[in-house]
Each structure stands twice: as structure tokens, then as C-alpha cells.
Image (cartoon, rainbow, N blue to C red; front, side, top):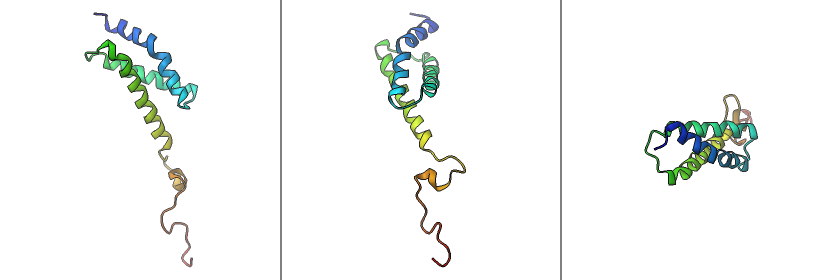
Length: 102
């Protein structure tokens, strides 16, 4: 069996470009795509201790990347502190913005 480092290097060389292109196709910037690709391969490194069927390694890595895309979308949509109602799609709560005589 290959050493852990050699296995990681093999998976990195084989799948890095595929993962990065997945992020770019989903509208993620080049810089953020590189960050997310590094995050995916951090997860690959951490997951190598588990028994890994090499025939399924590509699917596992693609699933990690898809999960990262979904997390990125959620991060983008989440309101940030101080954003106010506009962060939630501009919707107001019932009665918000109405004066006492309105």
C-alpha cells in the first residue's frame, strides 16, 4: 500500500483541477475557489486515515467539493450582523416602519 503522503499527492494531482473548476463553474471567484479547493484537500488529508476504496476516491472528493459549494452559498446568503432587514431579502416584519398614526 502507498504511503499516506504518496496517496495524498496522487489524489491532489488527479483531482485538484477538477475541484477548482467546479467552484469556478458555480460562480465562485478565482481567489475564493483556490481557498475552497485548499479546504477540500485539507479534508482529504484528514480523511485518508479511513479505509478508502480508490475506485470511490473521486466520488468522495467531488462530494466534499459539492458540500463546500453549498456551504459557500449558505455563507453568502446568511445575514451579517448589522445588515438589518435588507439582508433577509428586504422583507419587513408586520408593522415595521409604520408610525403611530399610520
